[in-house]
Length: 399
Image (spheres, one colour):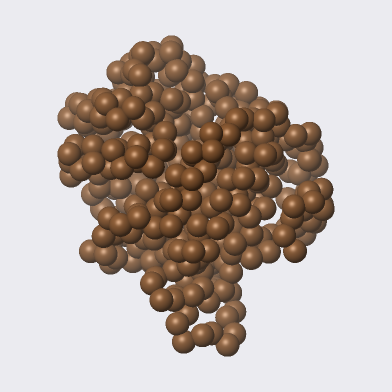
């Protein structure tokens, strides 16, 4: 979240070289909204030039990039320009900060409609036109878990928002777009319906985590992610790129005290008879993480996913532990495939191993649910029961 302000192209090139050496092919990265668009009608020229340098460095490393707009939501807090706030609406579940850690008491304005939609169009067109024909551009991402900023007023307005921005981006760049939908767009009604929202997208996208899913059987349940993938594929009618999965890593020498990370405002799950080396949050050991990663990737590929992205590249520096969002969410620091000292975790080698297999995309399976049935219910018991039926449909399910 501070990369654009303390931009270090040499450090980025080193990271890109390491990514490439592991056989990884695509980097998803965030354009911090406050940094890139300081006023509703003005972009920051210095940030745009840094974006150009970033994309060129990806190309030099023979990597592809997926730039994500309007971040926005990241690691349990929201980062917003002051002009995009709704001064009549408290921030609610997620704290709000400017990109330079100025805290605001308010949440995001209704960016699905005017006048914020015009500001967003200014933003995507200014960035998009810089990448027409760029060798390193894979897709655009309309926003990372953008419904955590604000739910859409209606499915029709959410679909119109996606249609407008994808149209602008294709006009100026010639490239298609995705959007960072996530598990809570399924387990809650965020005013989004996959069938209409995903229509203009180059592919459908989903994010999901076993430690954040109420129906998960355990921290290491490898079926949660493919289940979310197939739910979104069933309702969108499109193949899904699962562009965010992973889990927090337990601190060295510790084990997880329970199976699920509590959501903001939720008490921690009851943990009985904790071992002396219990971690302070739900997590996977490094070895558990490596095994979990392969099992999820294997299932995603065999069940029709277009690909998968691990969240994220590197653990955060310990010096950031007392800064937002980590001051209230320490587990957010340890999702990386490399440790904060730069050494590789076993999961990095798992990703390398899977990439070397060179598997092909296979056809998507038959839908497992109807959109109307799912959103008419919106009940945890129903969702858990459908997950169980999904498990029963596959012979490779772990007990």
